[in-house]
Length: 402
Image 1 (cartoon, rainbow, N blue to C red):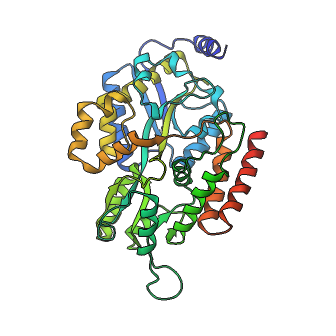
Image 2: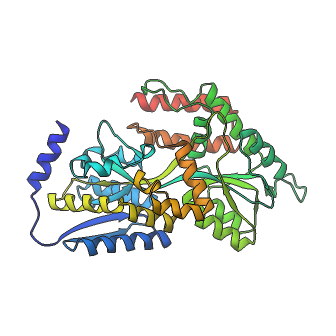
Image 3: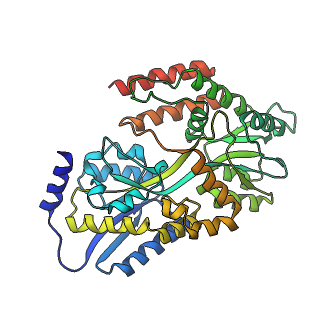
């Protein structure tokens, strides 16, 4: 019934006027990323002269999220917008079912790691996606760790209190409290999960969850813990031996290392029971609110264009994000590129070896906020790992039971 309702809605909105149709695309891409997106949109308009794209930079992700919340509430969202999965769950009924407008071959081409189904609906498709990898200084870490045990040993051998004041001045690794996805990578590698497969039971505090928390807590004692991006610390000359960050952070991290005059390289994340690594980045969704059928169809054409092999490969080459389709990842363009770019090959292999996405639970936004809070407590040693996991589990249970 929901799908029939969406079809009727867009039919009622009309087919749009003859000639050009204008669509609005809200995004959070700045700098080189924004330049690459602008180029692709201009290329699309050149191939589709009947469509005008009003490409609007809305600031960072937090600003984009708040503006989308307000726009949806007012019934005036853009035609198309970047959005994280946990945002999408807040406005599912305001989005178009993309399988009604995108060609079947486009949807079938998306890599399984990126497939998204919300309550039985396909309302977003992946776009700017990255994977967690390990950044390391070859002068401090000649052989990057392959396992948790190697990572922990190396991290704590690098950490030093140089001036003897009882505080670390050089760090083996670094963690950001606003990024609980690193903990979720540890959790998944330990064989754990936030919820059971049917979402009826909270499982984050079982044996696997506690093991992941204890590993994080031990390595945090040898780590720089800060809310700012780790590249900020590197650029200031702070010594960090290695840290886990997104492939999209590649340019920023490399530039920071260059500024500091230190070498930096990329390796896969250390593995435990498996080599899972969490996928990051946003997706594209089309809003039905206040949009004509012509606008929705034009936005769907833009999505299909952006996911086309030549364009998604261009996007990946220019930004550090990864191709999201089979035809792109395994196609000659990308394979030739990564044959000459070792670090991008490592990122691609990491994605194919164990990339996993967000939990598509309707309350995941609230769950993630709890994860951020308890991840910070864990990193700062403000509670024993088991106690923190038990408290986190109790709060998650309360959230999903409402």
